[in-house]
Image (cartoon, rainbow over all chains, first blue to last red; front, side, top):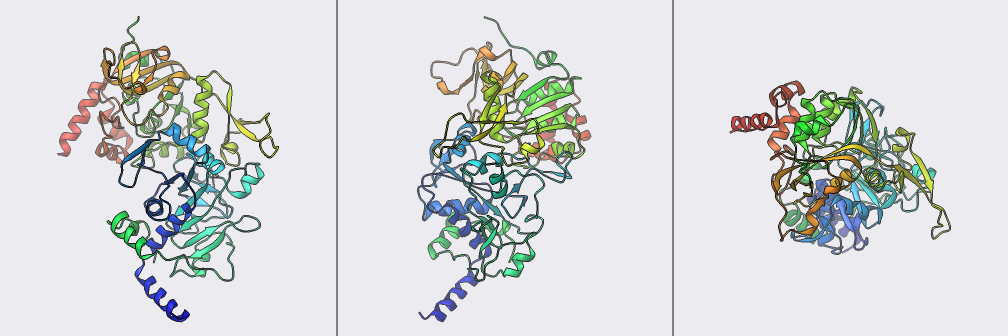
Length: 256
Length: 285
């Protein structure tokens, strides 16, 4: 195919691929080449991403049943992971988690604890949970299904997950890693001189302006932002027929 | 050897206002709810509560019994946000020591091992340090691979005056057995406490020769009292004996506190509560 023809074919395929399917693939990519570690995810699309990675390019990944067992793709038990051992997996670095975020800032500081003044919050959320220990010990990526200025904020109200600036100031960078942030609009990383958030790729159908308007701080945006890669035909089959046949991904990702 | 069995009322009779009390389980899983309900029937208040929080925290917070909560979260699991905990925090009803989950665990380990603190690579850089200005750090006396001396948070021991936990089986001497997939941290709670009270689904006369050794979680040497409370974790899960009562939990989460308390918590005993739950379920059919 000529370049133009290839582009045309890609564009045609793109119209058939839903936004949520790009999101699943973008989440899956977080676990590429991670080795024999636990792929932990909390939400539907990020969990589908972990399963897609394991079913395709990263079969060595470990998964849990959401409680205390390590299970294979067929649900067969292969190990025991009660909370006390789960926490050792975190501190031992044998895990890459994709957490959510009620708020996240340009350096990747994340908040799931509360909104407003901590001493008497306007909205109490979960609490910091394990976000502090996670961010200082095992790689932490984020999945944010609704990209908006209320989530991507200038400053988070209660730093739960530690971002690059705070980790550096605290001298706690030894195992600190935030490989990527995936939202319904694109993929973001921190490959910048001051470790502030950069637009790494746009999901097809999304413009740079749209991302800029939905973000409450100045993103680093290069001149030539690539598109998020398309799922392969086999990946699409896995997502649609095997991993999420009920289409829960389109309930979590409603943007178009 | 002494028979440690007692009633929920007898357990609560040994507790006092102002005490620091740890509550086992995790979120809406294997919580000693019958003992919490007995607490709610008493006048005991002004408590410091240490918990991987679930509806135990929600109930005590709604009833105004908590002076300070030590927790990393409070959740109903299938319902992420505990409504009564939320409401209490948003009206500034109690003080809080908000810790990370791992900091919390190492605080229990420190208390169980009679250590003043343990070093943890968690908390630094987060606002856990800001909202708990009493937290101190400690520097490793050993050089790491790069010749540096890493700084850690020195998590203080989470010592408590009483621990309340719920397990599947227990004997009269205080040995406790869990049969589900996760022990949570119930053994540590008992070891970190001056007194520990274990409620169970069923009291047994010994565990039998086919017992899986690893299920014997709680040793009688750190247990003060044993209470048989069938369905005593309700409405939290206590697998394999009982799943979480999801319809009831949904109702709990959506019913105004005064209405819920009047219908389910105004009785004089745990039996009254269990009867009220049964009646509610019959209405739903």
